Each structure stands twice: as structure tokens, then as C-alpha cells.
Picture 1 (cartoon, rainbow, N blue to C red):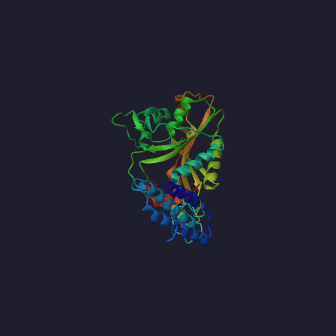
Picture 2: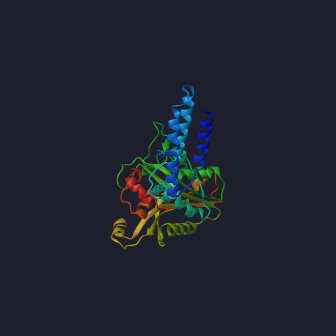
Picture 3: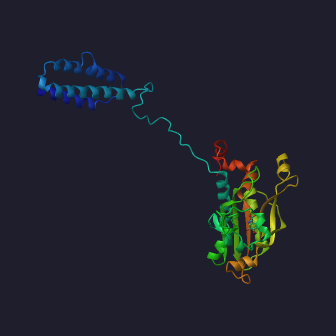
Length: 341
Ligand code: DAH
């Protein structure tokens, strides 16, 4: 009995050491161990003569040998050719599992581009809360209580407290930035804003703006215009802009910025209403009252500010007809941006 166990162990070592990719060698291995007249058949035959109390230990040894020989046979066959379909071992020559790459949301893509363009000329980033107080959203921006221009931006109030609201524009962040810093300052504030407006193809109650602010000694309207020209060239590739006189309570003078989009296609006619011009943002020289409200001396410093809506620009750039597409999370829409940026 003892020597039989030793024999099995020796066979086991032999099985483990076996290594070949040659079909004939593998076949003779099979015959040697697993064939009708092979080693295992002999061992099973010897089994009946084993004393009963040792049958269990002996049986386990034979089974271990049989499993090892079978596994080795399978493993060796794997290596012999492409016909083998077994999935039990790793085939490093197979192509990898594709890793699906997600897509940035078009608003994020555009926001990153705008940040990138302004950071090249020294603008930092700043942020503020979406739930604002009256001071930062209105009063400090030269929009005191009962000012008629407050009606330009229908406001969501938080519960019944008229002092707490969802910011209607990112201009609130310029107030916070001016309060917390001393000039010179150059900052960009992208963020989400809220207005109590009906949802349609052209407007939504939640959208995104980017606010820009620059304050230093002797900042002029020419600086503003040149910066905006640099921006529109970089983002739209359009090098003609015009500034139309406008009104914002926080800037004086104020202007709307139009870019010359052109009239090359039918779509150009449609989106520019036949004029070739498109309004893209508001801007102006910061009103001295606003500077004073934020503890900056208007005698010493001047500055400009501008604000733009990201959805509107993304619609122009990507040819999107309906603003609601941005918020529906329809994968057929979002996947189209997977290769952009
Ligand atoms: N806050 C304005 C709006 O939401 C946009 C704007 C206009 C911002 C002129 C400015 C600016 O900083 O100077 O309609």
C-alpha cells in the first residue's frame, strides 16, 4: 500500500512537469495516463485489493492524479492550435474589451472652452452660491428695491422670504468677488442661473451664464471691446463685432455685443433674422455706484463687466434648435458630443 501511494505521488509529479504543445506528444501523454490500458486504469484496478480502512485515502490520491492528468491534457491542447474554444485559460492575443468613453455635456464643453480662452489672458475663476440674497443679486448691482429693472429677471424666491432667492444671473458673483478682493482683478464666473419663465424651445427656467469682470486703474471701453473681439474670434472664428448701446443698471455705459455671423446659408438667414448679426452678450463699464457698494474707490479704479448665456451660444455653435434638449438627458443627443474636446 505504502509503495502504491509513493507511486501515485511520483506520477503526479510527472504529470505536473509535463509540458508540450506537440500534438503527438500530448496524445501519448493521454494514452499513458488516461488511456484504456493507462496508469489510471491500473491504479483503479489495484483499488479493490486495498484494505478497507485505507480505501478512502487511496481513492483520494487516485482521484487527485486523474484530475491533474485531465487538467494537464486540456491545458496542453489549448496551446496546440486556434481550433480550441475552451474559455478556461486566458488568451492574451484576443482583442481587449472595449472601454466605453463617456461624453462631456455640450454645456460643459463650451464652458471649458470659454474658461480656456479667458485664462490665456489672465482671468481667474470664481464661484458663488446659487441660493443668493437680495444684496448680491440685486441691491449691490444698483438694483434697489422697487427698481423697475428687477422685472427684467423674473425671480424664484426661496419659500416666503423675499430676501433669499435663486440667483437670476452670475453678476451676483462679481459682487462677491469685488467684496472679497482688492484691485487689480480679472475673473470669470461661470454658473447656473434661474428665472421664473415659461419653458419653450427658446427659453428655460434654468440655464448657464458666464460673467466676466476686470478692474484696474485706467480700464477703458477700448479694453473691453478688444477683449470681446479676442473672445469672439477665438470661440466663433468671427472677427467682426459691434457694440450697440443698451441698458443695464450695473454698467454705464452699457452695450449689447453682436457678432457678424454672415449670410451664407439658409440657416444663417433664419438665425440672424436676415440681418447677418447675432446678439451674444451684454457688457459695459461698471457703474461707479456698484464699485462703491463693494468698497472699491471709483475715483481710483474703473472696470468692465460682461455676461453671456452658454445655452444660447451652444445652440449657435452646434446648430441645436431647442434649448430643452440640454436638460432631457437623451443619450441619442448626448452621445453626439463624445468626440468633441
Ligand atoms: N446680468 C446680465 C443678464 O443676466 C448680463 C450682463 C450684462 C452681465 C451686462 C454683465 C454686464 O456683467 O455688464 O442679463
